[in-house]
Length: 110
Length: 118
Image (cartoon, rainbow over all chains, first blue to last red; front, side, top):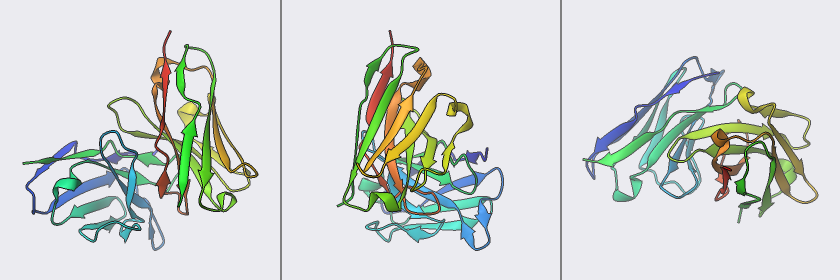
């Protein structure tokens, strides 16, 4: 299985930039497709898709969220961070079955 | 509006079986892959598996392949998860989700809690 590694937590100040990373144990890219996706989950809620295929903003998601990366290294950026962004963020790869999720990065206020 | 509503959860004894349902509405169900994801209390997300539009391809995470069965009824716009030989490690919120392509999930249900305990 492809293992996705995320830092457990990240502390950030409101209005600042947050950079959340996800590293895969092997490449999750095929040709021009980077099969890494990002979700936001708030306590008591279901996950919400933020970014698909590494850099594509999902419908209804604010432009302060962006994604980048290829191969094994991917980044979710939130700029500027707002209070409503305090949540846990998960990456997911779909390059290979079984699809796998990272353990999540909890975004906290500094 | 896309809507996914899970049902069938609850308290179940170890070793027993349970079948979850996910009722879909607001989109053409038979045009999409669908999947199941679970989340144990206080833990992260675990991908269970996915099923294609005509049920000809079903993928599972290997550790659950012998216990869980994913199916769908396109006439009823419903996705199912049959779980057997349940243990305490299966206690979790179970989510169904829609997969529009490239196997990410763009819509999720609100989840249903399954508690395995005697």
